[in-house]
Length: 492
Image (cartoon, rainbow, N blue to C red; front, side, top):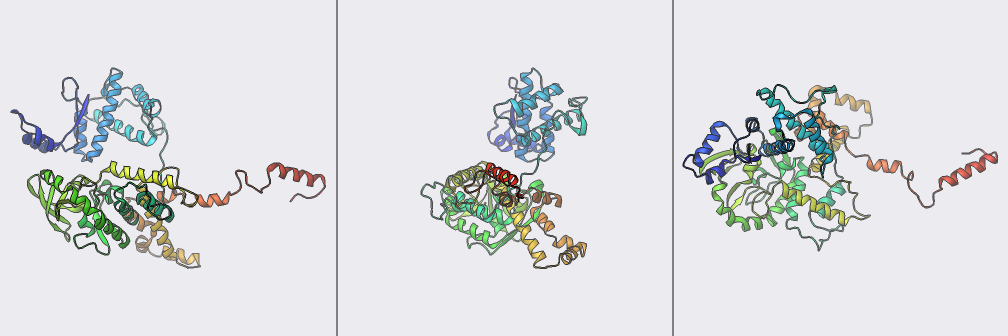
């Protein structure tokens, strides 16, 4: 079985048939509500649609899932169908033993077993497919029996906890300046540094840690949203995210002056080189881009031409794939409106930012010494900047709330005086709103899983383990105790 993804632009450009033109195919997909990225499953020999997988793929399109999500879910079902074919079955013929065998293969027996987090997602997709098959009449019942506590053959064996990590100030600066910026721990430039964009990567880190934005939010931000144009940047910025936010939940983002200065430095020193080098290639791709002719900053709208038609988009409602192809006329020709660019002149993708981070980690580990900050066992993630923002902001707000008030009872009375005051001024609720959490319970979980006390643990048990020069061994302690006891002296 083969899987393809719907792409109306490719169909319009390359489909040339006397039966159906590319434009007619794209129009049919539009009328049927089948969005780009919808997986289509075809038989490898006949190239005919495979049901009910194609209908299930269409249901994902109607659910308005992200393009990347539909692709990932489609690959999961393609993998499971391949497993079933090896057992001379198909997905609809799956039994509980098939599912148990598949789970064991994925989590234990294959060359690189997946963890509980990856299997949790995979099992959820399989569960959704069998639920769909029952609802549409392809199956009478799902192949899994429900055991105690709602568990079945697909349930992950272990429950996942939140992996919350944050950085201290020293750790963050080491990550930003040494890892991303190519410096040595003594602040001099590393002669072996081969990175081409230290200012870009440092600006991205500053934007993430000072705003609490998720990676996809700060990596896809546009110049007009930060108020950056040919005249430079303002003192601070305030804009809204929605389409790039998790679950599409709208919230306000405030960018402080320090992060704006860092971003402006990158825009002045590195970004012009990227835009000038990519102007000619962008001009050749003119018809594939959203070419902006007017920016209405106050209304938050962009006016321009996309696919040969005049379009108007609200910036907060622009998804990442549209932001990636958004360009405007600049000094060197067409240039992207995204803040962060790569050598191709457009936004770096997820794989590129992942590569930047991994390279930074290897550089940090290589430069680590007794004078550098302690590194965690696992490399830093971009999302750890968001955790750092949450903990730093919460700590600051709590200190501001309590101040130097010596009377704990007075502090408690002030915190619970009025419900409105509690909602407006409670530090935990403020941080929850800034992070865009649907419930304060999620924010509370951030605090529950932090490693704030690791250094305190070290100090509390210092000298308990290992051999330390100048300290008595257990044999010496025991010999001394026996000597004192035989002498009739009290052992202290």
